[in-house]
Length: 100
Image (cartoon, rainbow, N blue to C red; front, side, top):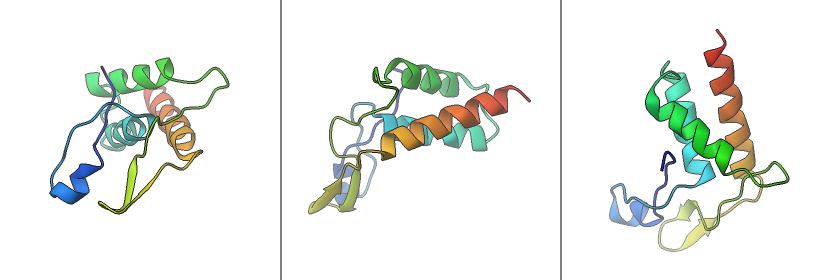
């Protein structure tokens, strides 16, 4: 779908476990593309489009469930502003890298 996601079980399993796309994971992937000097890569464009199409009406992004494992299998986090900060930051970096 153009976005990125990771299940909370990844930490417990000791390997990547796929999950539905989230704003946080998609933003992290987009920033990785930009910092790898790959803003023109199809994956970065798909991630930017995914973020643009999953923004809330008030201009923020929301993860529907937990997205960070504090202690895998025991404690998980879903900080309210984290998805919005990372999504906005990644889109800014993406736009800036494309305008050079």
